[in-house]
Length: 304
Image (cartoon, rainbow, N blue to C red; front, side, top):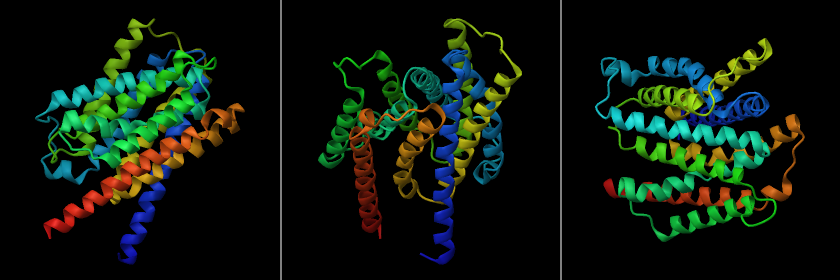
């Protein structure tokens, strides 16, 4: 690895950590606003404002310009289906943030890597060996440890971040069915646009849009959408600079970030709820990542 490449990788890691912080900041604003606005309302506002960074990411995509700046993709129904998954994933996540400790809800969503492994079997036809299945079981043991089903502390809201993780994972696996030559920002724009329409419909079904209660709330809503949109933009940039297998392990830094933010802004410190379940979730996810990296190296070596 050359010095320049090493510096690029470290910059990509720094950007991926920045994207995690931006997503957490978005979540903090959502938790702050949920007493006054519905989850679907906030999702609609977030997607509306988030279209701007999505368009910036698309315009800066060399692959999109090289392909003639085409807006239509051959498998547009899959792109829209991914947006439907994102619509409900956001809704369940925002509901959980309004009813659970910030770190607890956020940590459960990190089980999405485990769902992606499970979904890859029926949707992509991948073969998953015993090591990755063991990782999935380990991670879900951590989820159950945090949720504590059957205990007095368990509520139905604990299932919301798990449903969100499942739907986010499904959207990620579905995206892999789209032609590889389609720029990722274009796929994301289809998904974001569909998620915006879906959130608007969901808001109308669940009670409609209420008036924004103050200029302060309007500012927070703009910040929420800006944090989320910039998070996506920074994440896209980081994944262009380094392989996903390199950056994926650092995503679990989001768990201590979420714990720190929840303690700092809301006075929450759910040690008993999170540990050791959070370690099992991270351990399962990291085991999946490690196994996929090993398999990738073997494929590359076999092709030489």
